[in-house]
Length: 576
Image 1: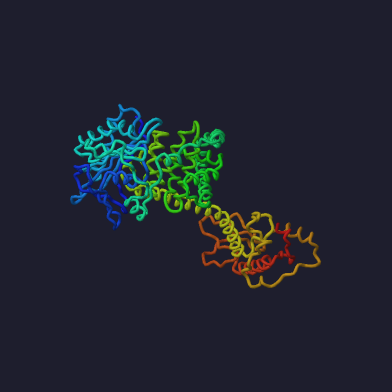
Image 2 (image 1 turned 90 degrees about the horizontal axis):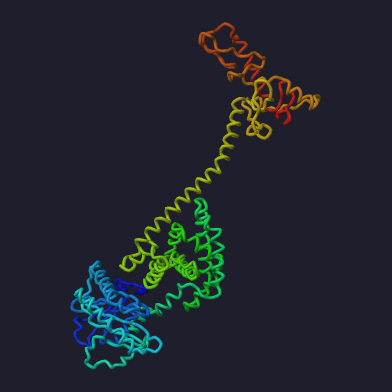
């Protein structure tokens, strides 16, 4: 059995509906009224029913079995769900196909709370070489009988069964009353019926055949196919090992998404072409073989494919659909199975934008390329059951927003890490200034005993300390009688009066060292500060402490201005 396509679901177009008055007991003129917006359309004959089929489906069917349900509404019938399958090549499969199609249409309507009450059946097939339309009608008559039996078992009668072939139609419900000639009735010219005019007024378009629709998704058979196969082989040798590597997979995913975005922009910048075949040729020319190969292989990763599925609406949907079609056409030769990913994406975007016909065909072709492709199976089932794609869109929107939030947080963290070293350097430099301010220019003292080398962040040559004593504001001129060499040697040899001791105390300029804490636990007073505690043996007197404070302040003033204790100024070389 060859099942080219399966399509079940309600006819949900709000602009057009069809109503009729059941039961259809006679083959004579019986009205089927159609409500197209504010306009009422009445179908009164099998010819008008045959002419209505393309408007019910949105395309002109070929090699198809089609069942359309009718629902009673106030004594009038309304067209509802419809189902389609390809006509099996072998007649032995007809009974199973008839049962499958009838069961799918009836149970699908029951799940939606609208069980069919009558069914109209269509058999559409063009004559092969040596056949006529009449011979096709006669050959398919057993299939029409199987359809009527299968629907009857489900208590849903087939009120009309039509065969459409070679521009003519026949009714299998004629009953031999001589109302239908053997050569059949001619079909009206496309677009000339009342229903065609009403559909055009409502903006309903009828596209070509399913064969033309599938051709937009089929692999290329031109000279480009050979070049594309070579490009796929070359890309596979470099990309497949990276995809199997944990780190390389993430890199390939990002590269695939970036390349797809660039190609979408390239397609969007081209002028639109009204003819579908010409538009596809134009898109093929814009897509290079190596670019197509990289995208086809990159989309085999399910996570990357799901990210690409987020281009499903708005301005992104049109270029994305064109790109997925073009990639499906590039899955040539041994890479036919790789078409499952771009075909599924094409079906998803088509369904998301309201084109259920192309969605079903693309998803069916994806399952033909890979029957176990889960994403295609889920979408195909949901589309056939008439579900709203908004639930899938919400999930993809949430995933896109979450990934964008993660990327923004990562970028903020990276900026913070880049800014942290500069802030730490600034804090260290500020701390060096503050320390020099507090210690009266201690950072400017020369290296020597009792002093740690100054760091680069506290280079007093570039950042002189702010003096803390008013006397330091007076300029101190270097002695002109002392050579620079001598001044440098004198500075290095002289002991620093502000060198820190091991206990962190500041000794007096006279060279006296602070005493260590007494054994009885009493703490000696700091140098240069008064004390109100008990006097201990060996402590300096109050007059000595006052003299020490004066000497320390004078030394601070000299150091803050770059001078030395002997009255010479310290140069940058001295400080280094």
